Image (tube, rainbow, N blue to C red; front, side):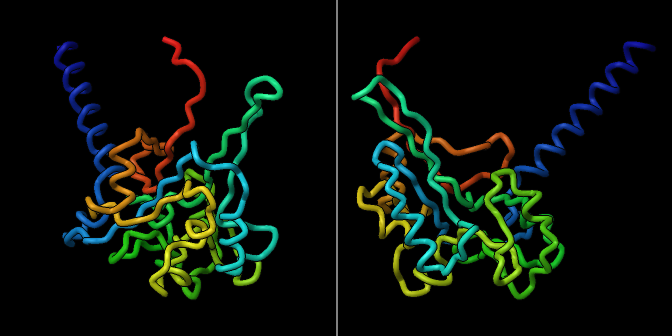
Length: 227
């Protein structure tokens, strides 16, 4: 009897675990019974090419009129590594990941946070935002903030309302002097973005959460491989 009870409880635990994983990872588009869009924008930050000049930050602020004190984009610097005069730094982009399964969208009570069906961009309708900050608390990447001028949630939207609306690349991509940023349609196998991802190893942040981020990083690898 005790063995049967143990097997029953084990089976229930496995079933519940499966349900939890499925809830986190299933596609929001598939759950609505809607077809996958033909355009799904993504970005690659090649850390091996980034020199930390911050031109991307400045361009983002200027084009999108981001107030001082907050930012849609940060380049995080770590280091120095090595001995002088051969010291070097590593630079990593910190911004919205444009998750396919976005926690910020799921918790928004007004629908102000949403995934654009035509582009896959995680966006904010500031007219519907009530400033509750649920999305800020839910974002595992800590990239959202309250815009001090609009009083609405704000973040990187790949310049959806500015550059993209004019058929241009995001401001950060255009400003990068070393072409460390590549933007494009991940559904298009002929795009520069897809070709780059196929040619170099990349990583994404916190993929274990099931968010399926569309910000990819190509890591800088220094020195000899140690096994």
